[in-house]
Image 1 (cartoon, helix red, strand yellow):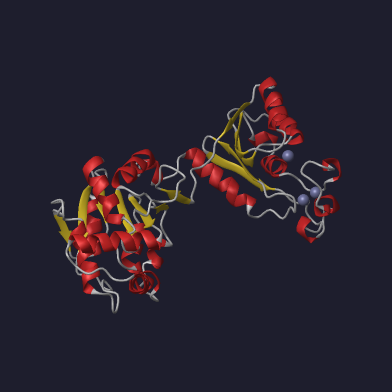
Image 2 (spheres, rainbow, N blue to C red):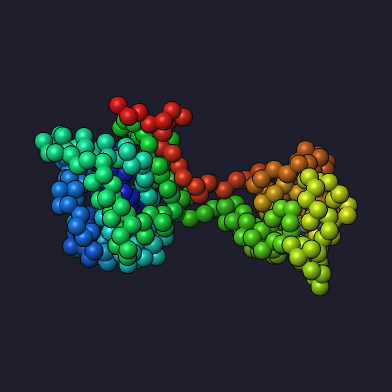
Length: 351
Ligand SMILES: [Zn+2]
Ligand SMILES: [Zn+2]
Ligand SMILES: [Zn+2]
């Protein structure tokens, strides 16, 4: 795999690259002579300091490329080894990398006060005068947000987003060990992830005012049907007043029998038809099925139900499915949100 690290000044991408190199068998790839490598007016000192950071422990890149294509071609032949680069500096280069199935873009961010402190410490170590906070903030704004050139165009597209508020290298290393960036499942969703994401995508089409739910019925790893909840055909959509009960805004589960909305599971089962739901069919739903859906699921011959979020009658539904011999399990896809690289809930130390 190839991990590309991007992020703000002193956010910690070089520290993370070093960890991957020293502890997880990654090798560093360097890309030089890039277009847009320089941000206008950015002090040379800053870039030089950043570039020299990674080399301070003799971690000099053995593999240096002058074009993104040469780097990608190199890794294509060796993608099962572990590679890391911190040199993706512009959108067109990133686009080339993102086409490949072995590439993972990881962004690293950190509080600006902490990044300024890290930058100042580094200046002291090199007997240079550190910039004051205001100057650092101005560099940082240009580095991240300068139109068409800023790093925010890269970090915005990261598949994994790390927030490096750790106060020491030890803490960072422990968090990275737990996180295991090298897990190849990050590159490609497994079947559960894939079908659950399809169910979540279906949920986005829902028009029900109470709750968006999506569902996918699968057999032999092929999608038979999809469904989301809402009013039946030819009736106004739920969010256009089609179901008075849903629009009343009563609590969850209240007045269910007066609801005109078909549930996502019902729609998916109706769409599939009993003929196509045979032994081994799996129903993926982003919410645990309600009681009425559960009896239909049981009757139509679904073999397994996989859900991601709980609903308010999970126990009752589980009891029916168990009695009927239908397997039930919860699967929650890995979070796409920000991951804190911090062991405790304490704010990052400022000492
Ligand atoms: Zn509704
Ligand atoms: Zn309703
Ligand atoms: Zn239901």
